[in-house]
Image 1 (spheres, rainbow, N blue to C red):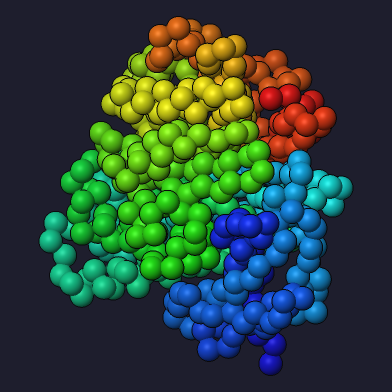
Image 2 (spheres, rainbow, N blue to C red):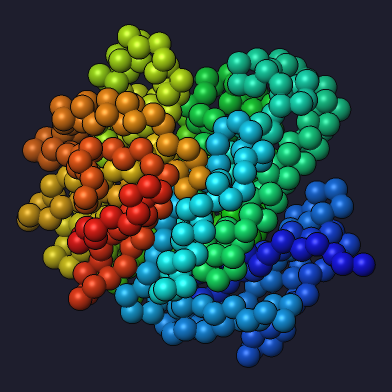
Length: 474
Ligand SMILES: [Fe+2]
């Protein structure tokens, strides 16, 4: 009998002493362990880290050199790896791998076209790392089909029986598991993630649409808490290759009060705060989440900090957009997304605090900060002037498989962006077109490639219709 196995999907646990600690994930029957991972160091047997019915997520942890190319083997296939800490690493960034409705019914070739192109780029010159910047999974439909969650997030039972909640837990786990499993089986995703270690930061759809911006009564209800618990359990396994009590060293809080993490490479620090675990309508992060960023600013870093903010940190003035929502009813479906932004009036002080922290991080002579973001299903870039003539660049790449919104929406945003915004006095934010594009927002599916030339980091967007942009030197 042949057993169907999905994987390996590689996750980067941490980088330490020139070594990459990796986790290879598999989805396989719960009662049959997948074959082991083989390296020169030995044989690494997968262990089950999450079960759901008769299936499980299995994980094999192993080490590979971080500063030079290497390989591993699994089930008779050799997989080559570029070291994440090798000089001038090539990094790919993606976000929004799905859509809210009917994602699993899409034509897989059409759906995964950007994944296939990333594979072609990897064949030309290998990526050392793949950053997934949020909405790795659109779990919104997980709440369908169960009476206790069918009305979510508008209606939910006030005081459900424990049996009902237990039944709902089984339902949600199954739905989340199916969805991740389907995504991880998709050809382009599967090919690339077996060859390039991934690091992931979740956004709302990995939990449910608008999580963190929902009314307190919904988020704190027993159904709301259960949705979050299941989403978190699944994200720990599928996105981070782990479970509670076993968080890899890159996470700031081993107890997982938030899922913010940091990876230090030579001259490049990846800093990924968790903007969802502790989010409420009033606060973007809790104390622990802020502590991580405060610590990173205090510690300093010689080189570039790649600040990964699922939701764009630099954006246009939103009060006008919110007004537009009221005037143009067709635009109201985007309202939730906007209320979720750093620029929302409710988050003004948090926004200023985070921008000040980025400014502090970039203050030393040897330091630079670059922001990468997703979430908006458009590609764009922005800048904010820092002290001593430095520039904070923000690169937004969103919609690796989420369809782009109408071009008219991109134009509307572009027009509003001309008005500018200066949350820090004397440091105006400007939104710019991508290299080679005329509008400030590009309505095409896309991914971002970061590489180096003559020691300088540069960014290119991979646009579905226009192809790769000319490089932006950072
Ligand atoms: Fe998204």
